[in-house]
Image 1 (spheres, rainbow, N blue to C red):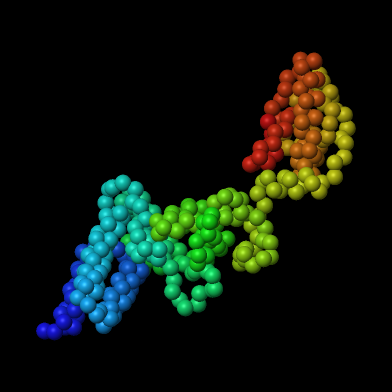
Image 2 (image 1 turned 135 degrees about the vertical axis):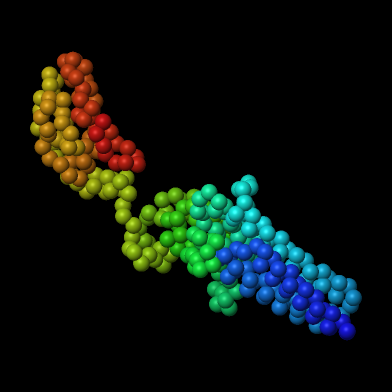
Length: 317
């Protein structure tokens, strides 16, 4: 048997190691990522034999082939334990340095997704940018689970403050997945610069028309804070009549939130316009009410004052 035949026998042995691991540690939906990858690695390593000119190069190539098969077998065992065994929180597992990583979370007590991040070599690279695929598998043990995949664009070169990464608005809205994307890049030795991590309300902003925020479902709805601020800026403010509430006079605008004042008579008006008035003049109205109630001894009704919550908008107090 000549050297070429012996090297081919080594290739068969490495394939046997991989197939044995795949039979022993079944990974369901992850196999559609791992099986093509390891066979592609074997094909690329098989071509190195023709370029071996010295015995030292042959030793390096054969050792690399044997190590690739052993590492793949160990990786499958680790991922299987991450999914099905009680153990500490599993980390991101690096399949290929700066190119491919997987995080499999335990599904023993509850269903948790598995995340896959890999660099795509599609031949359609944008100059100065690299194309990645971020996949989320809700049922990783199911071979038929196609999951959900997102295209991720990243700078092809390292930057002083991290590699700029651009994703879809849909992925930005999935905060837990978006955070895992950062962890995946860091496990590969890449420090990403993810805009939504430092601008938590970025996914709520309206499109700017620069092509970076295309969303087939249209712009997101306003948050309560945005709605209150916009109504307050546009609604006209008209003075309301002076009214007697209990033993004291309540001076200010007609503020109505659907509650009843201290005197037991409901104020007139409702809707965003009156809510905006309350937001604009709550401080003056509340202070007047406090002073008159203190002087006359009238009981303060919780619904007669207005408070403004930065997250919930205007509410009765």
